Image (tube, rainbow, N blue to C red; front, side, top):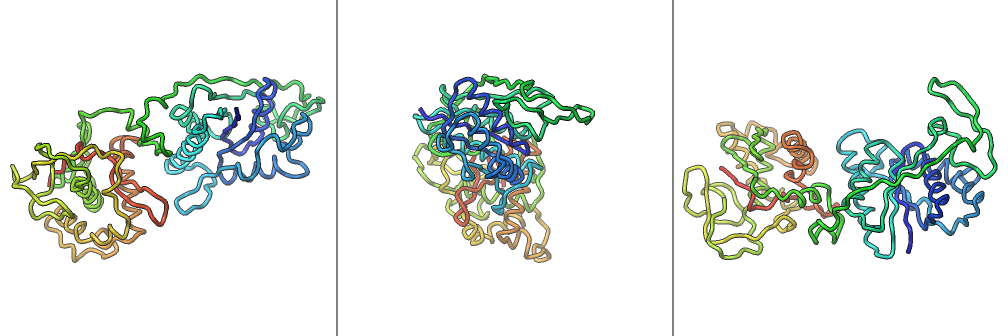
Length: 411
Protein backbone atom coordinates (compact mmCIF):
# COMPACT_ATOMS: atom_id res chain seq x y z
CA UNK A 1 0.00 0.00 0.00
CA UNK A 2 1.32 3.43 -0.96
CA UNK A 3 1.96 5.91 1.87
CA UNK A 4 1.49 9.63 1.22
CA UNK A 5 2.77 12.27 3.63
CA UNK A 6 0.55 15.35 3.41
CA UNK A 7 1.99 18.25 5.40
CA UNK A 8 1.50 21.95 5.98
CA UNK A 9 4.54 24.21 6.11
CA UNK A 10 5.30 27.87 6.63
CA UNK A 11 8.68 29.54 6.63
CA UNK A 12 10.45 26.67 8.43
CA UNK A 13 10.70 23.87 5.86
CA UNK A 14 12.87 21.80 8.22
CA UNK A 15 9.62 20.45 9.66
CA UNK A 16 9.40 18.28 6.55
CA UNK A 17 12.81 16.65 6.98
CA UNK A 18 12.22 16.34 10.73
CA UNK A 19 8.91 14.53 10.10
CA UNK A 20 10.52 12.31 7.47
CA UNK A 21 13.34 11.47 9.89
CA UNK A 22 10.88 10.67 12.72
CA UNK A 23 8.84 8.38 10.46
CA UNK A 24 11.89 6.54 9.20
CA UNK A 25 13.11 6.03 12.77
CA UNK A 26 9.84 4.15 13.35
CA UNK A 27 10.36 2.13 10.17
CA UNK A 28 7.55 4.03 8.46
CA UNK A 29 8.38 4.37 4.79
CA UNK A 30 6.97 7.21 2.68
CA UNK A 31 6.28 6.91 -1.05
CA UNK A 32 5.26 10.51 -1.73
CA UNK A 33 5.33 13.88 0.02
CA UNK A 34 2.91 16.71 -0.69
CA UNK A 35 3.09 20.08 1.05
CA UNK A 36 0.45 22.80 1.32
CA UNK A 37 1.91 26.26 1.79
CA UNK A 38 2.02 29.90 0.66
CA UNK A 39 4.25 31.63 -1.87
CA UNK A 40 6.85 32.45 0.79
CA UNK A 41 6.67 28.90 2.10
CA UNK A 42 7.20 27.52 -1.40
CA UNK A 43 10.26 29.70 -1.90
CA UNK A 44 11.69 28.53 1.43
CA UNK A 45 11.22 24.88 0.46
CA UNK A 46 12.75 25.37 -2.98
CA UNK A 47 15.81 27.25 -1.75
CA UNK A 48 16.51 25.35 1.48
CA UNK A 49 15.36 21.80 0.68
CA UNK A 50 15.65 21.47 -3.10
CA UNK A 51 18.80 23.46 -3.83
CA UNK A 52 21.06 21.13 -5.92
CA UNK A 53 24.19 21.81 -3.84
CA UNK A 54 22.93 22.61 -0.36
CA UNK A 55 19.37 21.26 -0.31
CA UNK A 56 18.82 19.61 3.07
CA UNK A 57 16.22 17.19 1.70
CA UNK A 58 18.71 15.63 -0.71
CA UNK A 59 21.38 15.69 1.98
CA UNK A 60 19.07 13.71 4.22
CA UNK A 61 18.35 11.12 1.51
CA UNK A 62 22.04 10.65 0.77
CA UNK A 63 23.04 10.42 4.41
CA UNK A 64 20.37 7.88 5.33
CA UNK A 65 20.68 5.80 2.17
CA UNK A 66 17.36 6.64 0.55
CA UNK A 67 17.39 6.76 -3.24
CA UNK A 68 15.79 9.99 -4.57
CA UNK A 69 13.43 8.02 -6.81
CA UNK A 70 12.04 6.10 -3.82
CA UNK A 71 10.06 9.17 -2.72
CA UNK A 72 7.96 11.28 -5.06
CA UNK A 73 8.76 14.79 -3.86
CA UNK A 74 9.57 17.73 -6.07
CA UNK A 75 8.39 21.15 -7.20
CA UNK A 76 5.16 19.67 -8.55
CA UNK A 77 4.27 18.41 -5.06
CA UNK A 78 4.26 21.86 -3.48
CA UNK A 79 0.69 23.13 -3.46
CA UNK A 80 0.25 26.85 -2.93
CA UNK A 81 -2.96 28.70 -2.19
CA UNK A 82 -4.16 31.18 -4.80
CA UNK A 83 -6.24 34.31 -4.32
CA UNK A 84 -9.26 35.22 -6.43
CA UNK A 85 -6.95 36.59 -9.16
CA UNK A 86 -5.06 33.30 -9.37
CA UNK A 87 -1.96 34.69 -7.62
CA UNK A 88 -0.19 32.82 -4.82
CA UNK A 89 -0.89 34.36 -1.43
CA UNK A 90 2.17 35.47 0.57
CA UNK A 91 0.65 34.78 3.97
CA UNK A 92 -2.65 34.00 5.65
CA UNK A 93 -3.73 37.50 6.59
CA UNK A 94 -7.52 37.38 6.90
CA UNK A 95 -10.58 35.12 6.90
CA UNK A 96 -10.66 34.90 3.10
CA UNK A 97 -7.07 33.62 2.99
CA UNK A 98 -7.85 31.16 5.77
CA UNK A 99 -10.88 29.85 3.91
CA UNK A 100 -8.83 29.41 0.74
CA UNK A 101 -6.23 27.48 2.70
CA UNK A 102 -8.92 25.26 4.21
CA UNK A 103 -10.36 24.60 0.77
CA UNK A 104 -6.93 23.54 -0.51
CA UNK A 105 -6.53 21.18 2.45
CA UNK A 106 -9.97 19.68 1.78
CA UNK A 107 -9.27 19.35 -1.95
CA UNK A 108 -5.99 17.47 -1.50
CA UNK A 109 -7.26 15.35 1.39
CA UNK A 110 -10.27 14.33 -0.70
CA UNK A 111 -7.96 13.47 -3.60
CA UNK A 112 -5.49 11.35 -1.64
CA UNK A 113 -8.08 9.53 0.49
CA UNK A 114 -10.06 8.57 -2.60
CA UNK A 115 -7.67 5.74 -3.47
CA UNK A 116 -8.23 2.56 -1.46
CA UNK A 117 -4.64 1.50 -2.15
CA UNK A 118 -3.13 4.39 -0.21
CA UNK A 119 -2.82 5.48 3.37
CA UNK A 120 -2.29 9.13 4.23
CA UNK A 121 -0.12 10.51 7.01
CA UNK A 122 -1.15 14.04 7.92
CA UNK A 123 1.62 16.14 9.45
CA UNK A 124 0.23 19.14 11.33
CA UNK A 125 3.57 20.27 12.78
CA UNK A 126 4.38 23.06 10.31
CA UNK A 127 3.13 26.53 9.54
CA UNK A 128 0.96 28.83 11.58
CA UNK A 129 -1.56 27.35 13.99
CA UNK A 130 -4.44 28.08 11.62
CA UNK A 131 -2.71 26.04 8.88
CA UNK A 132 -2.43 23.03 11.18
CA UNK A 133 -6.06 23.47 12.22
CA UNK A 134 -7.16 23.50 8.56
CA UNK A 135 -5.36 20.24 7.76
CA UNK A 136 -6.70 18.63 10.93
CA UNK A 137 -10.22 19.66 9.92
CA UNK A 138 -9.75 18.14 6.48
CA UNK A 139 -8.52 14.89 8.05
CA UNK A 140 -11.57 14.74 10.31
CA UNK A 141 -13.87 15.05 7.31
CA UNK A 142 -12.21 12.63 4.89
CA UNK A 143 -9.67 10.39 6.66
CA UNK A 144 -10.23 6.63 6.75
CA UNK A 145 -9.29 3.99 9.36
CA UNK A 146 -5.85 3.46 7.78
CA UNK A 147 -4.94 7.17 7.84
CA UNK A 148 -3.04 8.87 10.67
CA UNK A 149 -2.44 12.37 12.02
CA UNK A 150 0.97 13.18 13.53
CA UNK A 151 2.66 16.10 15.21
CA UNK A 152 6.43 16.34 15.61
CA UNK A 153 8.09 17.63 18.77
CA UNK A 154 11.67 18.88 18.52
CA UNK A 155 13.86 19.70 21.51
CA UNK A 156 13.08 23.36 22.33
CA UNK A 157 16.59 24.72 21.82
CA UNK A 158 16.71 23.18 18.30
CA UNK A 159 13.15 23.99 17.33
CA UNK A 160 13.71 27.48 15.93
CA UNK A 161 17.16 26.95 14.49
CA UNK A 162 17.66 27.80 10.82
CA UNK A 163 20.69 25.49 10.79
CA UNK A 164 19.07 22.29 12.04
CA UNK A 165 17.03 20.07 9.70
CA UNK A 166 17.49 16.55 11.11
CA UNK A 167 19.98 14.70 13.33
CA UNK A 168 22.88 13.67 11.05
CA UNK A 169 24.41 10.19 11.35
CA UNK A 170 27.67 11.73 12.56
CA UNK A 171 26.97 14.28 15.32
CA UNK A 172 28.11 17.81 14.62
CA UNK A 173 27.97 21.18 16.39
CA UNK A 174 24.90 23.31 15.68
CA UNK A 175 24.69 27.04 16.34
CA UNK A 176 21.56 27.87 18.33
CA UNK A 177 19.99 30.80 20.14
CA UNK A 178 18.48 30.69 23.59
CA UNK A 179 15.26 32.50 24.54
CA UNK A 180 17.20 35.68 25.23
CA UNK A 181 18.78 35.51 21.78
CA UNK A 182 22.22 34.58 23.06
CA UNK A 183 24.39 32.39 20.84
CA UNK A 184 25.22 28.87 21.99
CA UNK A 185 26.59 25.68 20.46
CA UNK A 186 25.09 22.21 20.96
CA UNK A 187 25.96 18.86 19.50
CA UNK A 188 23.26 17.63 17.10
CA UNK A 189 22.86 14.34 18.97
CA UNK A 190 21.44 16.31 21.92
CA UNK A 191 18.29 16.89 19.87
CA UNK A 192 15.27 14.65 20.42
CA UNK A 193 12.59 14.38 17.75
CA UNK A 194 9.37 12.79 18.92
CA UNK A 195 6.56 11.68 16.62
CA UNK A 196 3.21 12.12 18.35
CA UNK A 197 0.14 10.28 17.11
CA UNK A 198 -2.89 12.60 17.38
CA UNK A 199 -6.20 10.74 17.85
CA UNK A 200 -9.10 12.17 15.89
CA UNK A 201 -12.71 11.37 15.08
CA UNK A 202 -13.44 10.82 11.39
CA UNK A 203 -16.92 11.77 10.19
CA UNK A 204 -16.41 10.52 6.65
CA UNK A 205 -19.08 7.84 7.07
CA UNK A 206 -21.59 10.46 8.23
CA UNK A 207 -21.30 12.59 5.10
CA UNK A 208 -24.02 12.50 2.49
CA UNK A 209 -23.01 10.24 -0.45
CA UNK A 210 -23.00 13.19 -2.84
CA UNK A 211 -20.30 14.89 -0.78
CA UNK A 212 -17.90 12.02 -1.45
CA UNK A 213 -18.13 12.35 -5.22
CA UNK A 214 -16.15 15.60 -5.45
CA UNK A 215 -14.36 17.94 -3.04
CA UNK A 216 -16.92 19.98 -1.13
CA UNK A 217 -16.61 23.42 0.39
CA UNK A 218 -16.42 23.75 4.19
CA UNK A 219 -19.95 25.12 4.52
CA UNK A 220 -21.49 22.17 2.65
CA UNK A 221 -19.60 19.66 4.78
CA UNK A 222 -20.62 21.31 8.03
CA UNK A 223 -24.15 22.03 6.88
CA UNK A 224 -24.82 18.39 6.09
CA UNK A 225 -23.98 17.46 9.69
CA UNK A 226 -26.21 20.09 11.24
CA UNK A 227 -29.60 18.59 10.58
CA UNK A 228 -31.45 21.56 11.99
CA UNK A 229 -34.62 21.41 9.95
CA UNK A 230 -36.79 23.29 12.42
CA UNK A 231 -35.00 26.51 11.50
CA UNK A 232 -35.47 28.32 8.24
CA UNK A 233 -34.36 31.58 6.69
CA UNK A 234 -36.85 34.42 6.39
CA UNK A 235 -36.11 37.16 3.87
CA UNK A 236 -38.39 40.06 4.79
CA UNK A 237 -38.14 42.75 2.13
CA UNK A 238 -40.81 44.89 3.75
CA UNK A 239 -38.76 45.14 6.94
CA UNK A 240 -35.39 45.02 5.19
CA UNK A 241 -34.26 42.10 7.35
CA UNK A 242 -33.05 38.53 7.31
CA UNK A 243 -34.12 36.26 10.15
CA UNK A 244 -32.41 32.96 10.96
CA UNK A 245 -32.59 31.00 14.22
CA UNK A 246 -34.54 33.84 15.81
CA UNK A 247 -31.78 36.32 14.98
CA UNK A 248 -32.72 39.32 12.85
CA UNK A 249 -30.23 41.19 10.71
CA UNK A 250 -30.94 44.44 8.86
CA UNK A 251 -29.17 44.32 5.50
CA UNK A 252 -28.35 47.34 3.36
CA UNK A 253 -30.92 47.76 0.53
CA UNK A 254 -28.57 47.17 -2.40
CA UNK A 255 -27.22 43.95 -0.90
CA UNK A 256 -30.68 42.80 0.14
CA UNK A 257 -31.98 43.38 -3.40
CA UNK A 258 -29.25 41.22 -4.87
CA UNK A 259 -29.76 38.51 -2.25
CA UNK A 260 -33.54 38.57 -2.74
CA UNK A 261 -33.03 38.15 -6.48
CA UNK A 262 -31.18 34.88 -5.89
CA UNK A 263 -33.76 33.79 -3.32
CA UNK A 264 -36.51 34.29 -5.89
CA UNK A 265 -34.45 32.44 -8.47
CA UNK A 266 -34.22 29.53 -6.03
CA UNK A 267 -37.87 29.66 -5.00
CA UNK A 268 -39.18 29.85 -8.57
CA UNK A 269 -37.14 26.93 -9.89
CA UNK A 270 -39.47 24.11 -10.92
CA UNK A 271 -36.84 21.40 -11.23
CA UNK A 272 -38.22 17.99 -10.17
CA UNK A 273 -41.60 19.37 -9.08
CA UNK A 274 -43.98 16.73 -7.75
CA UNK A 275 -47.76 17.29 -7.31
CA UNK A 276 -48.41 17.12 -3.59
CA UNK A 277 -50.77 20.03 -2.98
CA UNK A 278 -49.12 21.88 -0.11
CA UNK A 279 -48.07 25.52 0.13
CA UNK A 280 -44.72 27.14 -0.61
CA UNK A 281 -43.83 30.79 -0.51
CA UNK A 282 -43.60 32.52 -3.86
CA UNK A 283 -43.74 36.00 -5.27
CA UNK A 284 -46.39 38.65 -4.87
CA UNK A 285 -48.42 39.65 -7.88
CA UNK A 286 -46.54 42.37 -9.70
CA UNK A 287 -43.13 41.50 -8.23
CA UNK A 288 -40.40 40.45 -10.67
CA UNK A 289 -40.09 36.76 -11.45
CA UNK A 290 -38.57 34.53 -14.09
CA UNK A 291 -40.74 31.42 -14.05
CA UNK A 292 -43.51 31.06 -11.52
CA UNK A 293 -46.95 32.60 -11.92
CA UNK A 294 -48.64 33.97 -8.80
CA UNK A 295 -51.54 32.34 -7.07
CA UNK A 296 -53.96 34.57 -5.17
CA UNK A 297 -52.27 35.59 -1.94
CA UNK A 298 -53.71 34.76 1.44
CA UNK A 299 -52.48 38.09 2.80
CA UNK A 300 -51.24 41.38 1.44
CA UNK A 301 -47.71 40.52 2.60
CA UNK A 302 -47.03 36.90 1.72
CA UNK A 303 -47.90 35.15 -1.53
CA UNK A 304 -48.37 31.39 -1.78
CA UNK A 305 -48.81 28.85 -4.53
CA UNK A 306 -50.58 25.53 -4.23
CA UNK A 307 -50.51 22.24 -6.03
CA UNK A 308 -46.78 21.45 -6.04
CA UNK A 309 -43.99 20.66 -3.67
CA UNK A 310 -40.44 20.69 -4.92
CA UNK A 311 -38.06 17.99 -3.77
CA UNK A 312 -35.04 18.91 -1.67
CA UNK A 313 -32.58 20.97 -3.67
CA UNK A 314 -29.59 21.49 -1.38
CA UNK A 315 -27.08 19.92 -3.77
CA UNK A 316 -28.85 21.02 -6.96
CA UNK A 317 -27.59 24.05 -8.89
CA UNK A 318 -30.13 24.20 -11.73
CA UNK A 319 -31.27 27.62 -10.55
CA UNK A 320 -27.74 29.04 -10.61
CA UNK A 321 -26.89 31.72 -13.18
CA UNK A 322 -23.65 32.87 -14.76
CA UNK A 323 -22.93 36.59 -14.81
CA UNK A 324 -24.37 36.99 -18.30
CA UNK A 325 -27.64 35.49 -17.05
CA UNK A 326 -27.61 37.78 -14.02
CA UNK A 327 -26.91 40.82 -16.16
CA UNK A 328 -29.79 39.92 -18.47
CA UNK A 329 -32.10 40.07 -15.42
CA UNK A 330 -30.90 43.50 -14.28
CA UNK A 331 -34.41 44.96 -14.45
CA UNK A 332 -35.60 42.47 -11.82
CA UNK A 333 -32.77 43.39 -9.45
CA UNK A 334 -33.50 47.08 -9.99
CA UNK A 335 -37.22 46.50 -9.31
CA UNK A 336 -36.40 44.73 -6.06
CA UNK A 337 -34.13 47.58 -5.01
CA UNK A 338 -36.84 50.08 -5.81
CA UNK A 339 -39.35 48.05 -3.81
CA UNK A 340 -37.04 47.89 -0.77
CA UNK A 341 -36.19 51.60 -0.83
CA UNK A 342 -39.81 52.52 -1.68
CA UNK A 343 -39.78 56.24 -2.33
CA UNK A 344 -36.22 56.51 -3.53
CA UNK A 345 -35.89 57.38 -7.22
CA UNK A 346 -33.39 55.01 -8.78
CA UNK A 347 -32.77 57.50 -11.59
CA UNK A 348 -30.75 59.49 -9.07
CA UNK A 349 -28.38 56.58 -8.49
CA UNK A 350 -25.13 55.82 -10.25
CA UNK A 351 -25.53 53.33 -13.06
CA UNK A 352 -22.36 51.60 -11.79
CA UNK A 353 -24.02 50.42 -8.57
CA UNK A 354 -26.73 47.85 -7.92
CA UNK A 355 -28.85 49.18 -10.82
CA UNK A 356 -25.97 48.69 -13.26
CA UNK A 357 -24.11 45.56 -12.22
CA UNK A 358 -20.73 44.82 -13.73
CA UNK A 359 -18.70 41.68 -13.11
CA UNK A 360 -16.46 43.67 -10.78
CA UNK A 361 -19.10 45.27 -8.58
CA UNK A 362 -21.19 42.09 -8.60
CA UNK A 363 -18.25 40.29 -6.96
CA UNK A 364 -17.92 43.16 -4.51
CA UNK A 365 -21.60 42.99 -3.54
CA UNK A 366 -21.43 39.20 -3.29
CA UNK A 367 -18.45 39.44 -0.96
CA UNK A 368 -20.21 42.01 1.21
CA UNK A 369 -23.29 39.80 1.45
CA UNK A 370 -21.10 36.91 2.59
CA UNK A 371 -19.44 39.06 5.24
CA UNK A 372 -22.83 40.31 6.40
CA UNK A 373 -24.04 36.72 6.78
CA UNK A 374 -20.92 35.64 8.63
CA UNK A 375 -21.09 38.59 11.01
CA UNK A 376 -24.78 38.06 11.68
CA UNK A 377 -25.03 34.28 11.91
CA UNK A 378 -21.48 32.96 12.30
CA UNK A 379 -18.74 32.13 9.81
CA UNK A 380 -19.89 28.70 8.67
CA UNK A 381 -23.65 29.15 8.96
CA UNK A 382 -23.37 32.51 7.23
CA UNK A 383 -21.27 30.97 4.49
CA UNK A 384 -23.90 28.29 3.92
CA UNK A 385 -26.57 30.96 3.45
CA UNK A 386 -24.54 33.32 1.26
CA UNK A 387 -24.41 33.62 -2.52
CA UNK A 388 -21.93 31.03 -3.73
CA UNK A 389 -20.18 30.35 -7.00
CA UNK A 390 -19.80 26.93 -8.61
CA UNK A 391 -17.51 26.01 -11.47
CA UNK A 392 -14.28 27.49 -12.70
CA UNK A 393 -13.94 30.84 -14.44
CA UNK A 394 -15.23 31.79 -16.96
CA UNK A 395 -18.03 29.26 -16.43
CA UNK A 396 -18.83 30.14 -12.82
CA UNK A 397 -22.52 30.14 -11.94
CA UNK A 398 -24.01 31.75 -8.84
CA UNK A 399 -26.85 30.92 -6.50
CA UNK A 400 -27.92 30.02 -2.98
CA UNK A 401 -27.32 26.52 -1.67
CA UNK A 402 -29.96 26.38 1.06
CA UNK A 403 -32.95 24.17 0.34
CA UNK A 404 -35.87 26.21 -0.98
CA UNK A 405 -38.26 24.52 1.44
CA UNK A 406 -36.42 26.27 4.28
CA UNK A 407 -36.57 29.75 2.76
CA UNK A 408 -39.51 32.06 3.46
CA UNK A 409 -39.80 35.19 1.30
CA UNK A 410 -41.92 38.11 2.49
CA UNK A 411 -42.40 40.78 -0.14
